[in-house]
Image (cartoon, rainbow, N blue to C red):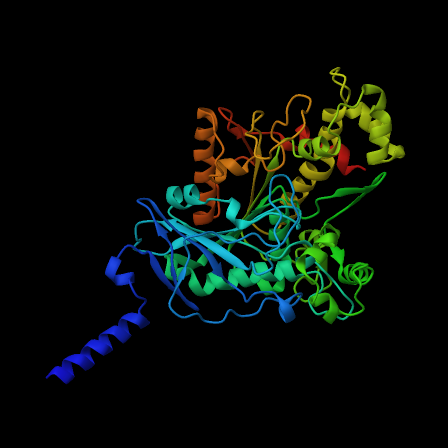
Length: 498
């Protein structure tokens, strides 16, 4: 009898190990079994969080500049009580520098209570100009709890690690975009374990994250990995100044990216040598590689072209921006006042001599003795607002598209140490983020109310494909939520004629 009992006890222990130790014992959802092993997260009265979960193998050694590889199964229970580390990057706007190359991890936030049916899943792709940023900045509990959804925030390789190209190197310029798809495939395999519905996945991102959504809309490899999309301040044809009168998008032909990579003065004659360089050495050229490549397997077509030609996945899409996008960029590039006498010269240096007088007439001086706000208004309309409107227009020909504009004139500050700006930074680039995520920013009562409205709208879109308003573009400001004449406000008729 004792032998039988002993055998039964051993069998029970083995079965408990297979079924994840502690999951049933505690019954609080603290331990979840993923396809590669068990993870133990943090449980509160309202939500659960799981951090630092690998969705791809460490991109180090031979895996540096290689498409994401499968994770090796781990034994026991992995500690998931801390968020994912930031990928290797240089410091920018308060985002600390990092030399962590092993960073292909993600975080999951869910409501604390179990649900009878699978919840919608929202996958956040952070911004940062494809050179900076991290998933760990974005606490997603508001979105998860208020909307009864599962939120996944992901890392992806940045700069020289994510967009590097070299002649003959497979995947040149698209490693970061490929990482995002690897994370979406992880979601397909593991959503149910966290209570999510793999058949109802929304990708959403801001700035480079919004551009990344454009890339995934245009990538054949992303087919079936998501079912709705949100583009925040990342028009598929967003442009940045390159020379007087010349603006370029964020996308580059793969051959061009490879040429730039081969020209780097890093003391290496081949890719094997480059793979052996320390992270710190590569970070010296990090910001050179801020532009993902197309003409590649992952991204066969330029996303700016894809939106026009319809070579996109046809899913409901929410597309929006902030009212004063360029205030942040102009304030950073011109930290001190610029006198009125410099206005036309500055405009010509930005938009070109041919249309300088027209721009000056369209955006007259306001008499505050500092031209930076006028320049920023023109740049906002030219490079951000009107390209966003184009994205809505092009995509709207083939799928349901909704629009919004974040327009809080007193938006909370999220970047430390910004220089003074005439009239304040208003609804600057990225200023909507602390209303969607808990970023530790103090919100006024009006902003708190607007935050609740926006969080609910984003969640409604994830559940139904519609944010809940009828307007083509809904203005979002404290005490002033409603339709706006976006095209007229941002003079898109004028910029469309140039």
